[in-house]
Image 1 (tube, rainbow over the protein chains, first blue to last red):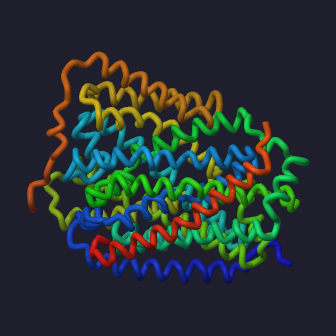
Image 2: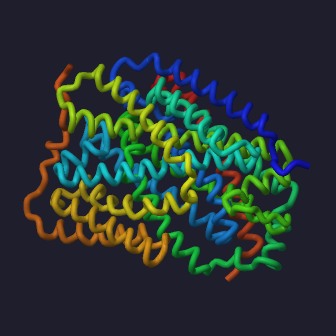
Image 3: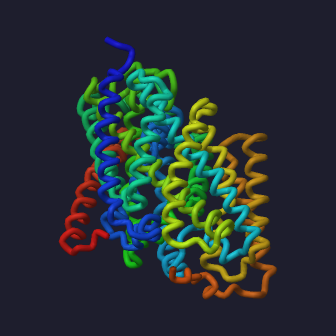
Length: 475
Length: 40
């Protein structure tokens, strides 16, 4: 038996077949894109089926398939239940999505909202936060691709990472958000069917009673319902998830792209569909101690258990599931970050007179540029996946209250929103370095919330919502 | 406090059933949108 679950030829063949199919599909869908609005927001006309699937699939990242089992392996049942609470982010974003469609009928990005609602200073801070987060996530996804291919098949890290990035960059480049959303639908089906299949086969082979019995005897802490470290992680994870979804243009661009009547129900259903997935992926890890599996890296516990129990078939299924999960998030992030940079930096800061054709061209170049930058940052494989993402928690959690209050409360001004994001991030980062990763998002959200609270109490001049309905002059 | 075997089984089986329903729901919505010409 070889050291790896899959041969590197088989792994590369799977990547090549799926990659070529997705690039061809992206090119075919991209033919319908006639304007920048078509490319960036799929014509603002996405129906319920595609909308719900893209909300769910984008939130299933490499973390859901690799880190949820890892956390279950470390924190037990609280690990998987805690991880599934991240569904709250999608569910709570549902009413916000409806509100966004009402307040910004012509908006393009989350940056548009911050600029029009709070002014330039807060907008600059927000762009910095969004860019740090986007690169943190992009690099962690690119690295996850390389690490996954290497762990399952022995394929060299740089080849795997480059292949996954290349595929996602090309189909996003050709098809824009339309291609991203349509591939998300197919990827969502692949992810759920694959995860359920592995869990069902595992349950059939090992048995639930037997897993519980083994855990009770040898690892009772994994069944402990009062595990303090796990509960701390749970609350930090909720705020991190809320910050990620509330601020990121990945979700705003979807809210703006969905048909008005489906925005609320698509995010709500997407959240409900996502909720059980970390429990299913986490359960796979609970079989590890019984099977005598102690993986070299904890985030490979899910794939290792599947490959060990189900052989090459299990390894192939896991490989396709994680590859789909990576692609469904990478493409979304590439498209949304390119939109943000094109709209907020190029159009609003550098070239306000740019026409539609020019913006479309710049948006495509930006997708390519982001792909190249991500590839360069992924080359040295600097940080572990968890550490990289948790670092951005301090940034994104500071935006929760400025976004939430900005959408519903007329008395929060730009000065306080800006101070809330700066102070929240600073204190969150201090907590990250002085105490630990598990308090960064909590501290950031708490400080930002307190500053916003003072701002709402002190201001007497309400904001006029009409100022948000900025419309571009027709080209 | 340990999670009982019954609760553990209920949690995993419920998550599996809900996850199994998800592709069916998405496909049903797709067919509905397709016939209503409401995909995009």
